[in-house]
Length: 120
Image (cartoon, rainbow, N blue to C red; front, side):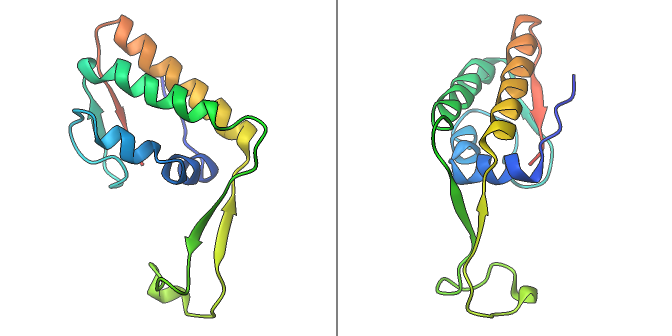
């Protein structure tokens, strides 16, 4: 099974701290590096809990995350410094669907005794 992670969901995973939480688990690699990271069978259940926790924060709220803050310096120097703070507003429904698909992937991998991998 493959789960496509949209830019919307990628920003939500980063902004909600899901990527940081996954990196606290015994995964093989660094989630968010752009490279494939293996989630071994022993880490699948805790990873599922991270996703369930993220899903709890999506209902009834609007989330925006700063992607470029002129006060902090641009993480993308090529973008220029126009003094404007750029934000991403998350489409919660799309993010919820992505979380559900990722949860299904992890739980089916776990029940089959397999690991999974993720690339963000």
